[in-house]
Length: 275
Image 1 (cartoon, rainbow, N blue to C red):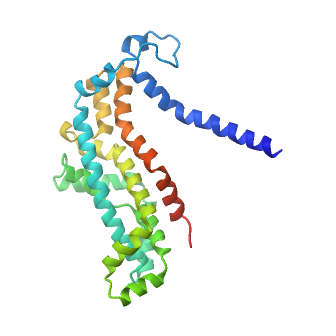
Image 2 (cartoon, rainbow, N blue to C red):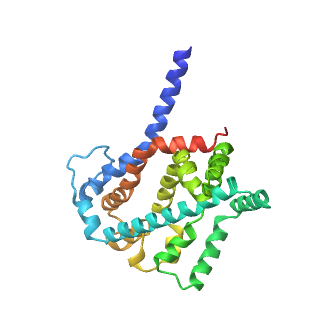
Image 3 (spheres, rainbow, N blue to C red):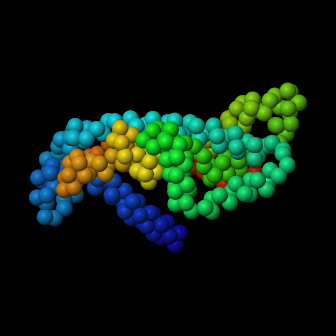
């Protein structure tokens, strides 16, 4: 009976895995098909008889995909670095420092998660526009350097560090910042790595905000560049070329996740476990 149960579970997981991975397989497969062979298939083929790399070379020659990738890299690195500093200091203050009204302030801070994201986008758009920061990296980055959820996740992780370590460090004359960077961050490294990776993925896939705040192609990110590719690059009908561009854009995130998947799982599970 136990074997039958395992067979059913593994069969279900295998089918589910195939369903999840199939779109990625189809994307890569289509990117190696020529425009003529793709349109000539009355019945879609799940293999390539005559693979071509022309779609990949066209992804960089027909549109400034390299510029889009560079812009996205700058946006992702700077936003993630600034956000990690901001949320680390905020999480440390809420978890370790003693000040009047701390718990009430943290409750109010968490209540911001209940505000619909659409309202925040509208407010940010008006603010950035009034500051004349449209079509600038500053305007792209500023609204993304704070996350209530990441502060909460890191704060819960910091709260698991024994108070005795903090008191012992204070007896030795260690400052709060030195204790944070030399004790708490090394202990909570899995959660910090998880937050960094999740933020990188979030920035790389960001679409709505960059689309609102930029109309200059010099500041387009890859997510917005895909629309530009579709409209003014390969054309709406050249699906293989579009798939090649999407593969190029998606590959960095796939590699990043495969390399750090263990840290992501460890950080999430640690952040949600008390004691």
